[in-house]
Image (cartoon, rainbow, N blue to C red):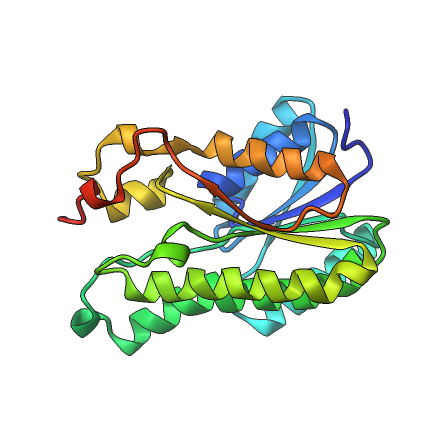
Length: 244
């Protein structure tokens, strides 16, 4: 139980990468706090963790709202007093030409993926500082490094997450807080299949693969920062159909 006694917070924890990460970290002893807007999904993940003998709690919050993340800080401060691992996994995707991307669409994508990462990290920074060696993992995307037609809002948001992670890694390194951005290619999650229902399943990696990578980072406990790109061996970005 290598993470026994550790407190991990996972946003976007109700499904997909967040759910897989919560289950993985709890399986090796971490107490996991899963955060999302949907309480029913969160309770389902908590039940899965507890059925496997792990410890978890659910906290509802909209990561794009300052008041919600402040309340999250207060609850975590009262209950645990620190955070050892923060996984910023809340996200939404949008596939559309720029001309069809409304201001509301843009704000939803950028606020959830980028602003939410900023708000949660900033709000919980005082609790991360209470850890002997804290880790912040921001779920970005390979598209944030490469760009892709028809996903301008998502690309901009994830590129922002990568840049934010790079800057924060330098800023927090003297305090022994590591910051890593994970940049997956397509991942087998509900969000992916909703966005690209016609994609070849061979191009998708499992959410568990991302979760295993986060666990690996948590176990390292050294100065590892930067970006990690994950993709299927046969992945060819040019062959991913965005035709809905």
